[in-house]
Image 1 (tube, rainbow, N blue to C red):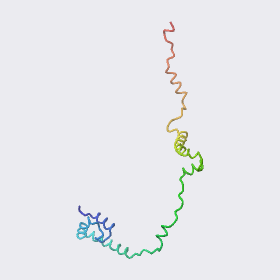
Image 2 (spheres, rainbow, N blue to C red):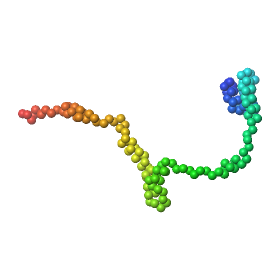
Image 3 (cartoon, rainbow, N blue to C red):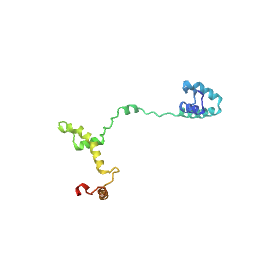
Image 4 (cartoon, one colour):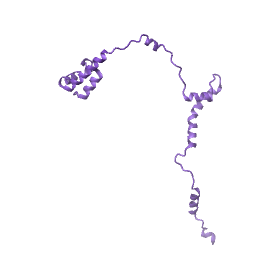
Length: 152
């Protein structure tokens, strides 16, 4: 595998300017590419400036932050819209026989939604506005002549 400029930039951007932090599988190729390429040396120079600025940055201390986060009480979990709807239709009661019908009502909700959609939309089926024209055209195709046998 030959080291390319793009891959070298990725390595330096991900792991920094120090070759000891680079992946072992690509370290030898990257150092060889660094020694032979001026562009790679500029990339490492820019990255070393960034590394020195980052090493100077001090993270402020927050005493007790970990304990405070771990010991906080979580807010109560809110129910979804279906639960609110079911509680509105069938209030929860521990000893009610209506509780046995709750799963059946939940299963019927998609059916009711489908029925509602079916009554609201035509889905490309046009209404029969010209039904008289169709009826007259079909009547004109009928043979209303009497058979010759009955006339004789």
